[in-house]
Length: 122
Image 1 (cartoon, rainbow, N blue to C red):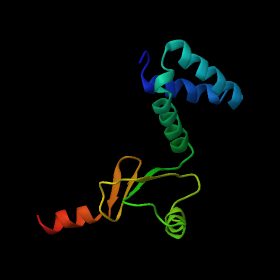
Image 2 (tube, rainbow, N blue to C red; image 1 turned 180 degrees about the vertical axis):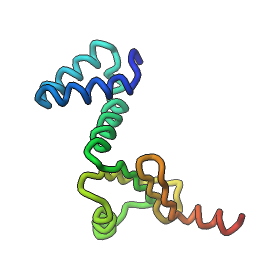
Image 3 (spheres, rainbow, N blue to C red; image 1 turned 90 degrees about the vertical axis):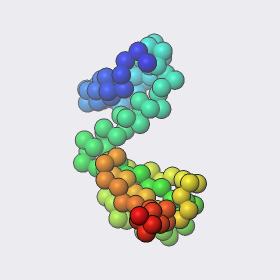
């Protein structure tokens, strides 16, 4: 990568405040193509999204489950957070049962069966 992800995030965060969103995104994608970093766009865009959510006062929440949750459970979990929070639901086939919630990559609530069994047999 020609520039670090943090450089791209900072540059985009600055420009998005000065020009219309559509123009900023178009120019940013042209920059990524010019620098040869378009192939890293997924990581860069996720980092930008995280920064914008954090600046808005929201939290980046990863929710891992062993299987697809029903719409009722998904709605119940969603209502535990604010609308400005970003919720990312993922299925982790390594989990036997339960749910693991990570907030801003720092706080973790681990309600998985694997975690409960490991605590039981320590």
